[in-house]
Image 1: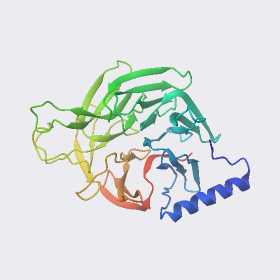
Image 2: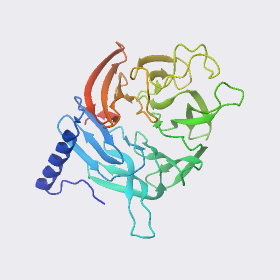
Image 3: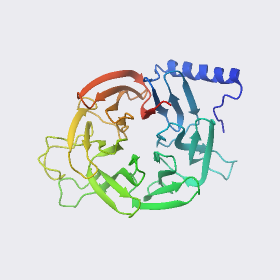
Image 4: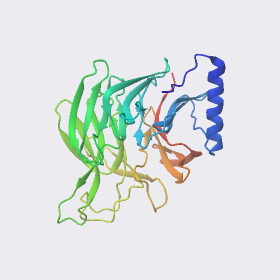
Length: 330
């Protein structure tokens, strides 16, 4: 296991220089914003934190899984997964849920909590971590909440195989919003698995549908949930009527299901990604970063800033890794 460290300044500088050159060699810039910490990269490989002054690469292990990382509200803890390669021939590579202490530059792995992909969502206060647990491909999965201080795991709802690709905590840490695929009734226009956004109440254990859509993100203010997939041209909220679902649209909805509105298109109509990155909230809940895939072969993105007050969409970065989180630099 290789852990990025700066215990010897010269070695750290060399690692950072090589990392920046490798990123530049792939034609990728590093997104930076004033007074901001951004979490970006291609986890579980090339997971990166950027500030206005520096770039820190947290890990570089390769994996076939797709992990969506997260960061605490104070920017001190990052959650993702680590690839563990056991001794041959009996041990298989495993992706284990892990957290990274930014001040200590150290990973902590949670043995017994393995994932095949999906979100690893850290609560705003870094006390709990929610993730999708899949024991085997093709099997049902379930949401699980891990209390980091005690190591106690609380099982959540059973989910279908393609569920929980995105998860996001409410600011008070009492609820989780996540996406999952559900099968519609046989008499509907489309009985194939369809994405919907649900809310899981940790106190009651109840799960309730919020809206059809994908890739939800709860605002730091708690007032809104941003997501992909609502078409304002639809006549009602049911799948059976209205024009086709459009996962390229960015929308907002209140956690109680009111106030639904469409804000912007992620990209021109056409092919869409299977697991598009969720919209990323600014720390003050006044703006969103929107990842638009630029080159699917190189997996690079253009990053747009959507000002929610002026409803103005501005491209901020071109040809970069995707951004997953934005917190205030302290």
